[in-house]
Image (cartoon, rainbow, N blue to C red; front, side):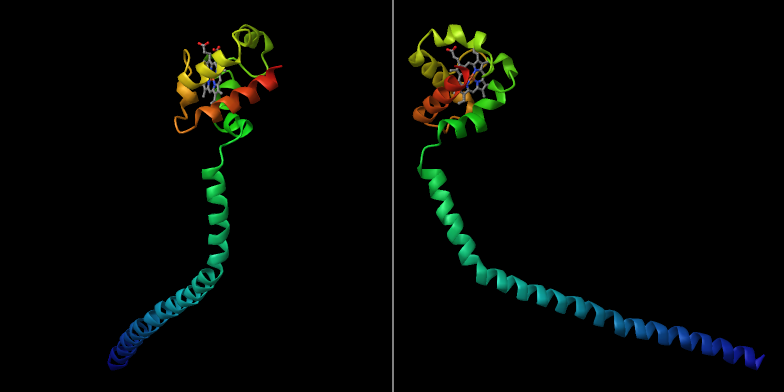
Length: 148
Ligand code: HEC
């Protein structure tokens, strides 16, 4: 009886020690992962150190995009192609010479005007209101060059 009792005591003591050990070790592992985060912080500071290069590249690239007008190909591929490559919304496709023949007969100025002001299912400037008239004109020229 007494032996059983003391073996139970040992069992409980073991459990308590295990709990205490876990209580001690767990925060240590948390701390360790924190110090891993510190190491990552070291990486961050490395990132910060190389960042000026990245910023420089961005600064170089951004105004080039913002300042210079987009050329016809860029505008066409980013805006107009959504409809004019696929025929979506009933748009005359770039490779559909028959669909373009009567439009080309209207003259370039009429086509520039339609593209800027919109026509039928085509919204003004193909929906890209931030584009300049010149950029739209460039896109029309690009498109017409493909049609011919
Ligand atoms: C939402 C789809 C859509 C987008 C985007 C779009 N178009 Fe169109 N486009 C059309 C449709 C539809 C027509 C035919 C309109 C009609 O004749 O009723 C058309 C017709 C045209 C025509 C012929 C106009 C005429 O007078 O017959 C030109 C030129 C043209 N688009 C240029 C452009 C350019 C340039 C862009 C990009 C800036 C563009 N489109 C973007 C749908 C689109």
